[in-house]
Length: 149
Length: 149
DNA sequence: GGTGAAACGTGCCGCTG
DNA sequence: CAGCGGCACGTTTCACC
Image (cartoon, rainbow over all chains, first blue to last red; front, side):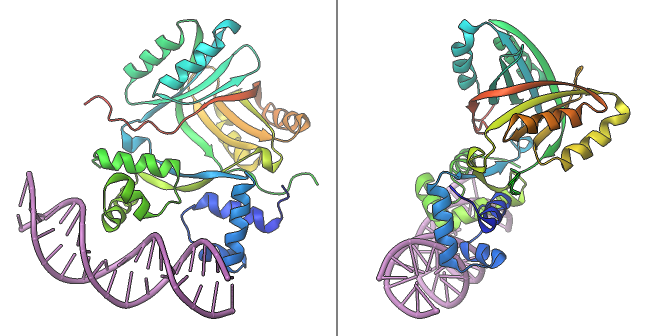
């Protein structure tokens, strides 16, 4: 799917605030409301926009701590680890990666004891390296500038 | 701020689809539209909901590759690294962490050459370990079940 | 660009703790 | 009495032509 300048502006605006009206969006970008409606519909159906989500403050849910856990294991355990990640509510995201590590896992929790439980569970069939998140230095949106034409 | 069962249901529903009407939300949860309006307003003002964003498909932007780069450096370079992250469009997020690594950085790019540029830039005042993301095994939402009552 | 339908914000009232 | 939810209204926004 081809994206022009205005599509990119739309994506940028919808990343900043997904709950603004199509009319407000149109005013910002210079399109009428039906034109915006059509463009957004195409971006959704074309799979460019996968959905809309609320950004939740983890701290306000009592989850003040985050950690990034690197997991090393053997190939036979890959699938069971994926099932484990899906079962554990502390796991926010898990990526399978190249290199010595097999997975890099981000988790959130309320207290150090919770992290201990997570680490113990993940170390059952492999070894782990755990880093506590001190601060999120950058939390950017998706880069939208037209890249290398 | 106190969150009851219905607040958690609202957060769950808004994470799944932030662009649904308050009336539809109310139907799902069992509240009238004005009641929903009020609850959502309080969740926003209380800082529980930080905002609403569109989920963008990186592949459709031509960014088919992701990597996670761990950066080790000395304390004097911390601030300049944070500025560097903010300047680089490839950097999606960067967390400062405990342990031997100083930062764990996620980036997205179109071609391996782009990653090479990123790694070169990040290795200028430290050392890096780079892992290519093979697949995102888990991409969950924030856990909302009431924790440890 | 315009029109019927749906959604939103607000004020008022009743219920409950 | 305070907090919360439901009803009804005028206004805005949307989808379709």
